[in-house]
Image (tube, rainbow, N blue to C red):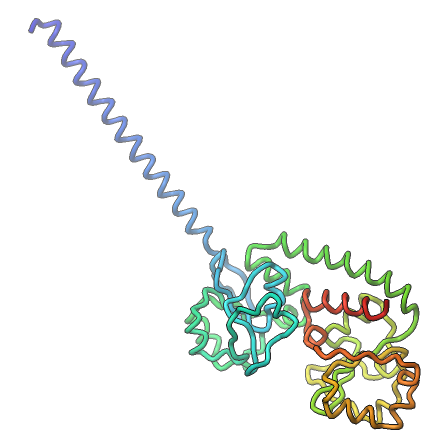
Length: 320
């Protein structure tokens, strides 16, 4: 091999080596970029939010959510809870169309039951004394968010908070916008059918009478958003406290509502007592045949988007 050929051969060897080194370098750079991307993904997989018990870091897209008694809010955001609230065999009937196949969990959230369903997010109300375990007990099982008193008492604020927690802020805002539109339409219809006639709502259970104050459950929506007239007997009750005190049969003889919605089973002893009371049967609302019976009280005695929308539909249909 002459010297010229040797130089060309050596040049080819050096060039090949340089190309191999460059290729290895690019490969390493690619691995580094992938690693960085993976790190960004891990970071995005969690969010930190302020809760009543301080900051809590939760999965960005939790799949097994336990939010006992707040299932209404989950359904409004198209989420299915891993378990639903119950007291023994009793559940929130108005949600059963969406939750019929979901297992129940006792309202006190027994730790053994919570462990068995393996949630990856737990949402609790601020009244922690209602639960079997402590906050620390639940936080040891899964990231645990504790709702503030405002979030518990105002379902619209709660819906927005759930939207933030679940990465569904846009869905929450759209749901609220759709609700406002529904309220405005229903207000017009009820103004045409009821005008300034007053409506009262009463839950009869266990022989006792619970008249809705103006701020009690869906009555807040009926009186303050739909602008339905409240009778004097309701206005006299003032604002309802957390404990709901029954009203006497004697007081009910003063019923001055133009329309009365009675929630409860017709075989309840309280309803039987009403039907057998001469004083009650002589009230104007009974004499004018303006008493309406509805057996399932569940949507009327809850607060949430689903409960409010169901109540609006029933109210509008009732007075058509």
